[in-house]
Image (cartoon, rainbow, N blue to C red; front, side):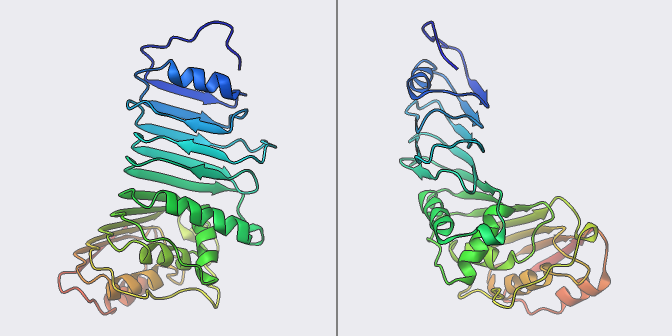
Length: 291
C-alpha cells in the first residue's frame, strides 16, 4: 500500500486495513491525517514496526499480526488515549512491546498456533510481559490459546503480575483441556476481581473428556475478597470437569460471592448435585443452573 497523493481523511472515524503492506512512513502519515479517527484495525498487515497513536480521538485499536511476517523486530505499540486494545499474535512470530497505554480500560489478548510443545520459556516470558503491560485495565478478555500458555506458566511456578482488573472474561472453543491452572493463575493475579465469566462456544458433549494433568492447580493461594458474580457456560465434559474443580474452588475462596450462574448444555443431575454439596464461604452465595 503506497500513497502518491497527500492523505487528508478529516472525517474518517473507522479505518480497517486487511492484509496489506504498509510501510512505516505511510502508516505514520495516515495516523497524522485522521484527526477524528475512533477505531483502528490492522489485520494481517506488515511493513511497519512502530504503532504510535497519539490522537485523543482513537478509542479502540485492534491488531492481528501477520502470520507470514518474517520480520522478527518487535512491534512497538504506544497509544496513551486508547480505551480498548485488542491484540492477537501468531505464537512463533515477533513479539509485541506495549508502551504507554495509560488510559486503557479493556484489553483483549489471544495467541494463534499454540500447542503444548510450542510453549517455550521465551513464549511464557512474552505472555508475562503482555499481562504486565495491561495490568491497569479494569477489564481483561483472553482466549483459550493464551490461557493455555498461562496454564503452562502456572504449573511451572511462574508468578503472574498483579492487576487492577475487576472483570475477567475467558472464552474457549472446545479446547479447554488442562486450562484450570491458567484460570487459577489469572484469578490469583486479580485481587480486585468482581466479575468472572467463562464460556465455551461448543458443548463438551461434542468432544472428548478433559484430562487434567497431575500438576494442575486445584486451589487458590488466597481468598477472592471482592468476587460477587460468576458466570460459567458449557464448561463440563461427561464427568463434569473442569467445571467441578473450578466451582469448588470459587465457592470456597469467594468470600462475598452473591451469584454463580452455571449453564450446562446437556443437563446432568450428577454434576448439579455435586456442586450443590460444595462448601460456600459466602453466606449470600446462590447457585443457579441453566440449560
